[in-house]
Length: 156
Image (cartoon, rainbow, N blue to C red; front, side, top):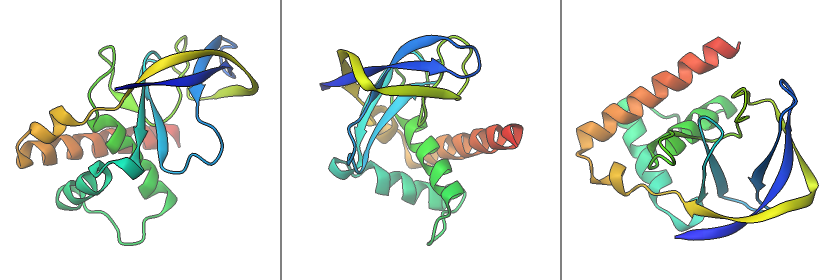
C-alpha cells in the first residue's frame, strides 16, 4: 500500500545540499517515516495499526534483552531495529532518521513552511521478516543491535 505524503525542502548542514524529504504533520503519534540508509527511498510506518512493535520487542528480549523501563537510548536502538527489520527500499536498509543523499550525514534541517511536492511513499513491509524462522529473526535483531551500538560508539 502507498500513501501520499508532503515533501519539504531540506538542507544538509554539513554539505549544504538541498533536497526534498517527507514529513508527517504535528500530532502524528505512533507514525514514522523510515529513510533509506543512503537517503534515497522512504517507507511509512504506523505503529498504532501494527503488531510489529510488540513482536520485535519480544524477539529483542530473547536476543539481547529489552528493559522494562527503556531509556531514550533504548528507544533509539529499538526504532533502529524496527526500521532495519522492514523490507529494503531501493536496495537500502531502512533507518529511523533522515539522511542526506549527497554526503549521508544525519545533520539535516527541513523547512516545514512550504511543501514542495506531494509524493507516494510505500508502507513499510515486515512480511519477509515475519516469514523467517524464530532463530533467524533473533539473529537479524542481534545483528541490527550490534550495528546500532557500533554507530553509536563512532558518533560519541
